[in-house]
Amino acid sequence: MNFTGASSSATTEIKRKLWNGCINIKVVLPHDSEDIEYLINIPRNSYLPIHFQQLISYFQNYVSYEIYKQALWFEYEGVPIAWNLPVGVLYDYLYLPSVIQERGGGGLDQNCWTIQLNLRGKYPAEYIIPFVYTNPDNTINYEQSLNEIIVNQLKQSCFVINGSAKPIMNLSESNSKLLWNSIVTRNLGQFTSLNKKIIPKQFQRIPVKIYIPGSTTVIQAPIHAYEDDKPVTLSRVLQRELPNLFTNDVKLARTYIHGIDISSIMDMPLHDIWTIFRHLDNFLYIIIIAMS
Amino acid sequence: MNPAWTDDIIKQLDIRDDFEQRDIKYFTAFNQLSQQLQLQKLANKQQSPSPSLTSPTLKQEDLDRTFIIRENQQLKNENNDLISSLNMATIKNEKLEQGIKERDSTIKTLQRNNEKLKSKIDSLSLEIKEKNKTIEIINDEILMNQIQYNVLNDKVSALEAERTKSQ
Image 1 (cartoon, rainbow over the protein chains, first blue to last red):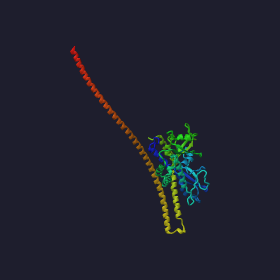
Image 2: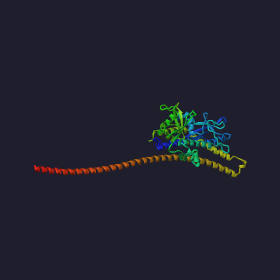
Image 3: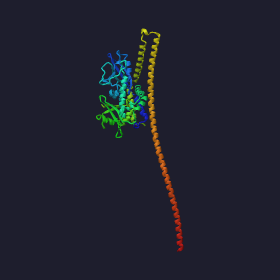
Image 4: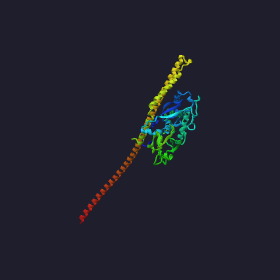
């Protein structure tokens, strides 16, 4: 594997920092004219429903009704938060544009990302995926819903990469469970060894999702790793997918992956960028923030 | 030396983490306190006074349960710590594997170069042998020419002597 001249220790350091990246989130539950707050530190490549159990256990101490039987959903500035995306992607998509100026400049006026927990309002099923599974005691089975979504995402990315979802479909039941367990418990060794079975050495296409904050459009483009025997670069992809924002001469937007501006690697092969920056579902999530 | 892009990415990740982790001590403290709250709640639940549950054996059972809950929480925390250290070991392992791969490819390149040089040496040795043979042949020819020259010289001398006598 060649990362355009990078030493192994440098790329490993990048991978270590990406894996350990965490976000501080303040969850606020409005209750009887006061706010109950819960502070949680969530890894960027984790998912909100994995942490629902601890939120429920905490908030149940303060409310009289049974939280276990309500479908939890969050909102940020009135926008329902999609639980099926990695937490880091949600942060970059919803919150990063408003704090981007402060981060580099050292101004720290903003608090951490504060999201509101909703329990009793109408579940916004038209914006976010509903939780369809329940346990025998009528409580909501968040884990099963998340498992189904992640497995589907993995199948999609596997199909894009291999041209077929066979590698993931051929995983034994125990290996599938181990893969899911490694995502929940964040067991990198187990995840890496199982994920290697899904990803081949020869790529057909690269699974990429591009989000633009303030817009509901998601560009989900399977991109060929090579064109005319030359590796495809990220800048080439953006020029093609977003010609209004990225031209040869003028760039009207900045590109963020894992919360960092990646302008310095725009001309690197997309395959190398994917290898380093992909998420646990093997998708490369790119956030485009328009320059003010 | 690392190319500039890795240094830039590492620097940006540091800025990101400094910003996103700046209040981490409060979050860690809150997490520990909320765990304690949960344990306290569970312990209170177990020990709630009930007229039918006041026998000494049941009290002991409650204490045992509370102890198990505490132990369970501690084991969960330890498990999380172990997974974190395992992840660090995996990342280190990956780094070492990457290093081994790089060295393997360097060794392969050097071996290929070595083989190329060996075959070059072999062909040069053959060339030298051939040239040596050619030199030997040329030497022989020179020697033969010298002999012929000497013989002809002798002949010329004899003829000159004969001519002098006849004059």
